[in-house]
Length: 81
Image 1 (tube, one colour):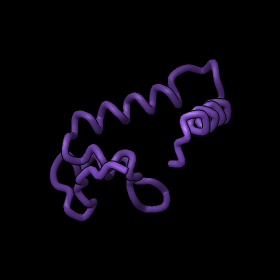
Image 2 (cartoon, helix red, strand yellow):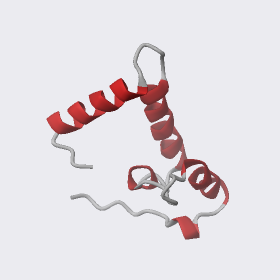
Image 3 (cartoon, one colour):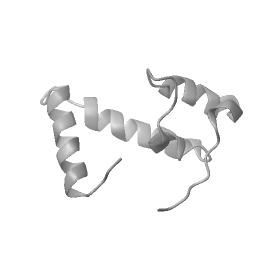
Image 4 (spheres, helix red, strand yellow):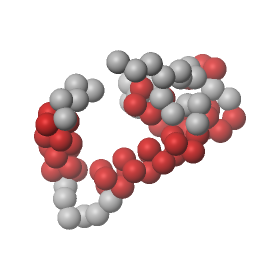
């Protein structure tokens, strides 16, 4: 598994802190899949915008349908995240 340096939430400053605050999940933290972009805020924004578009982009699919597609794609890709 690759190791990517991440800035912890309690060490985030300025723009990164703003993004972490925006992305904080109900459990109280930011998912690692987003925190891996902490050393490059433009990629964090890009990843978030891509995710938001895929999961909420059009009204053709419900949220549940989008989640099920994500589960199937992750299974096919053998992604255990």
